[in-house]
View 1 (spheres, rainbow, N blue to C red):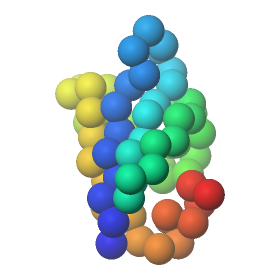
View 2 (cartoon, rainbow, N blue to C red; view 1 turned 45 degrees about the horizontal axis):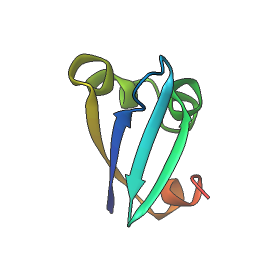
View 3 (cartoon, one colour; view 1 turned 90 degrees about the vertical axis):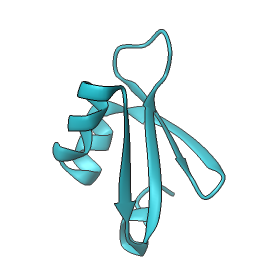
Length: 63
């Protein structure tokens, strides 16, 4: 399991910055929800950041 850190990209309404294993990826919140489900966005909307635990298959989806 790896930890994925999600935050909003400043100045945007729907772009999320993902950090995992030293990599930084940006994608829309819609794409994030399609990959990991709507629950992935709950803390992001409420707190402005979220941490998700991903298995190897889920990490592969980010490539």
